[in-house]
Structure formats: structure tokens, C-alpha cells
Amino acid sequence: QQPVQSPQAVILREGEDAVINCSSSKALYSVHWYRQKHGEAPVFLMILLKGGEQKGHDKISASFNEKKQQSSLYLTASQLSYSGTYFCGTEYSGSSNTGKLIFGQGTTLQVKP
Amino acid sequence: GAVVSQHPSWVICKSGTSVKIECRSLDFQATTMFWYRQFPKQSLMLMATSNEGSKATYEQGVEKDKFLINHASLTLSTLTVTSAHPEDSSFYICSAARVPARYEKLFFGSGTQLSVL
Picture 1 (tube, one colour):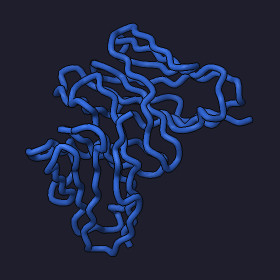
Picture 2: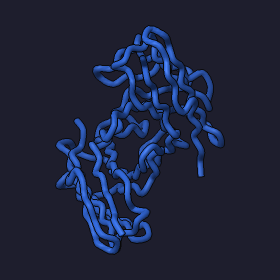
Picture 3: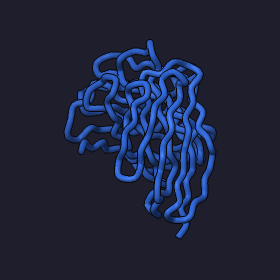
């Protein structure tokens, strides 16, 4: 089952904040976040491994609530370069140890000047 | 960082022909690679897991005979779309991890836009 991302699209002004959520109906082993710009390959942002774990990368951070089977990506003081489509990729508990990810449907973020 | 190269970037072919897409890991050995299909403004749909030296593992609903995957070496996996039809037109993208294990980030190829006329 594909994880569900919300919202589907966000439009921001430069400097504003945004939150993107990723929810699963199955128990998660880890959550990965990637950003893809139009016509380009997805680029890795971060991996969250443990329940309650939080990570940060510049002004982009994320949390993973293992019990709720969900993760949130936080973008603070957004920059024009943050524009793109954000995907969460999930590894399910009990899945084979190959690193296979199932991706959410994506959230399109547009940052305007 | 690790680099995954994918060729061609785009291809146009006639209906009924076969198209081969290559995915190479340039600076690491990849025993496992993943192939995805992506429609405009949609998600990365996992098609199959490519395993070096063994058969690929296909996701439910993906036709094995339609999408042939060969992973003949530790740095190369190929996806062949056989007898392509217009409905096969899509963006195909591969990925690989340095180690086929959990917690490993994926490095993606730049993708191949396939248009079948």
C-alpha cells in the first residue's frame, strides 16, 4: 500500500513555513524523504529510523512517529530553491532487507518571491 | 556522492518495437537496483527490484514479459520494454543504493522519457 501524503500541493511566499505529512496504514521501519525538481532525478533529503526521531538538514527537518505510522517534513523560512515535488518513501516492517521503498503520491511545493 | 547514470534520456519509438534503457552505477557496485515508472505529476511507482546474477522481483501488476530486466554485472541493469505501445509511454527511472539494505539512501538516475508513437 502506498503511503498517503498531504497536502497534495502548497504555494508559499519566500520566508514562509510549510509542513508535509506522510501517513501509512502499515507498520513502518523507516521513512525517507526526497525532493524532485521538474525533469530531474529525485534527490535524497533524509532518513528517519526510529519512532520519535527527528532530523534536520539546513532549514528542513523531519519527524517520525512510529506509533502513529506517520512522518512530517518541516520547511522553515522557505527559499525559492525549495520548490519541487517532495516524496516520502517508506520501508515497511517485515519487508525484505533490500532497501525497497514505496513512495507516496508526492506534494508539490511552489515558493514564490 | 555516488552517481547513477541512465541512458538514454529520451527515446521515441514506433509501436511494436522494443526499447532498452540502461542504468549504471558509476562509482560503486550495486547488487540491487530498482526500476520505477512515473506519469506526469504522479508518484514513483516501483516496477521491479533488479538483482545482480538472478531474476528480477516484479511488483504486483507489472508484466514480466513486457518489461524485461537484466542485471548482468554489479554496475549495470537494463530495462527492455518489449513490443512497446502508446500506453507504455512514460518516464522510467532507476535507483540504486551502495548497500542493498535498510537505512540506505537511494541514488537515482536522471530518468528516461519514453514516447511510443
